[in-house]
Image (cartoon, rainbow, N blue to C red; front, top):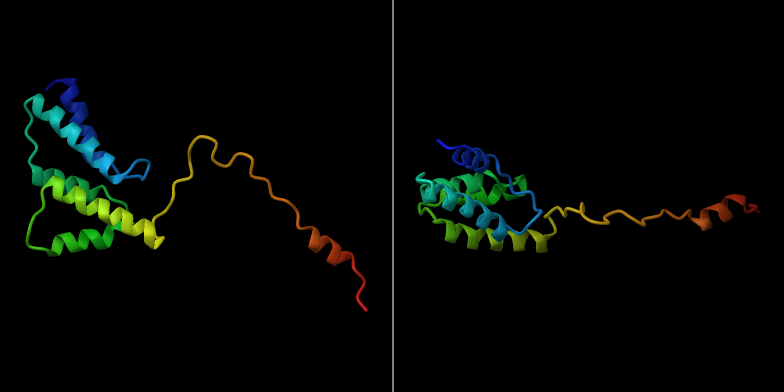
Length: 127
């Protein structure tokens, strides 16, 4: 095996959805790795990729994973992508989707101002 094949085969099972990009872009990234492997002669079954994607999801997707495992139909990557994109939107609307604030300029310029009311009240005379 070539070094590229080994690198791609190592990358695929260790990928995790970390919310740094959209679910759709994350799945596209995974399918691109599979496409590169296929051009190098390594066949990755669609159902295998579906399980890689499901296993790479963070804990808030637990109910989604349980539902998938209880249905009798198996989805292809396109169907899974559509369903996960809907789930991502639902989680964001529900407010149970953690927001990643790490990025350019995140946290800069945040200053905590002392509460002037508390200072005045502490020095006020009580009757």
